[in-house]
Length: 326
Image (cartoon, rainbow, N blue to C red; front, side):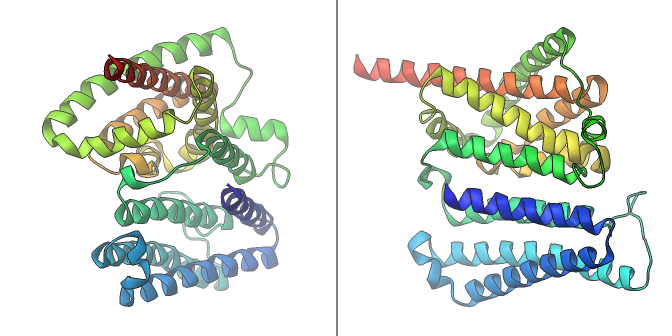
């Protein structure tokens, strides 16, 4: 848990530095330097593991160690290449755009770097160890810490306290005072998502079969540590608020619905399987909700959906235990 707090704390400091880099050239260069050094360290670690995979043997086979290394190397290169191009463009005082987005801005490069590290780390861990073998302790506190970090990253990422006032930050994220309409829309969308999940889950299960088992077991492991219905509801609220503020609030207005939904899907380690198709579609539905009715409705939708899925999973687990007891 301490490692999680330190990791998010460091990430938030880098995001804050990137915001100062939007106004100060020295802060901009310092941000570039920190990101580049982190990526080079990651690349060096990946190369070391590639040539000495036995160092990870306690966690898996040599083949898994090499897969882990290649993912780490790939993530590092995905960070280094745009950074080098941005450094060169900044040195020439150029401001290139990609689909109208000035991607060399410190805040955009920092977002790209942190997302690549987060998603690449998920893929690497999934390759190194089976999901069913992962040991997860203190699931609820970790979820709260992680999603609090997501929420703070969203606030700082759009310039809170540096480039924007609190009112401007809320407007940029798409947040407004919650209304009864938001709750009704969110409830309807959550139920629709639950139906879609059921239908698509059955189809994916019929097509891919056992590939779905690991993600289901991973979810049950987390639900079992949430200490009943109250913990499940708190989990739903935390993940709904944190993930929506980050993905649909901060990222979607820049990256668009499709790319944001893709990033949202691949950032979920438990769904790095054919089930990721379902998560991508749910991301699209949440993106549509945010665009049409605002971030508040999307948060309510996501929170209620996660809570309903968690409660259904908890009920199924309790029923299985009852049947075993008989």
